Image (cartoon, rainbow, N blue to C red):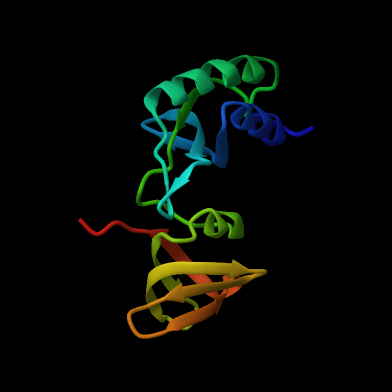
Length: 149
């Protein structure tokens, strides 16, 4: 099994869902970032992830990384939520964000803003103010969820 699938099993064991794993460099420090989301959906919206959940998950993942480090050299493990406003870079990110407000840019320079209605295969459907827009995943150059304050 791969490291990500092992982490996915640990995340599932605490009733959360793995959103993403990333290796980033910030301020000359390497960070292995594990982002998780709640499986619980209330009124069409996912519940939040508590700090206690993140701490518990950190304690579960840390020993695994002692045996199978994600990078060579020093790094810091960071477990948290991807946040209300997050990048959508994989088809799986889109599937996990149905019902959220999204902003997309396409290869044809079109900007689409609305509610992510559904994902079917590689097609993304966004409900704008006037219509449902259908766009191929591979035609999206940039995408993120957003929150109107």
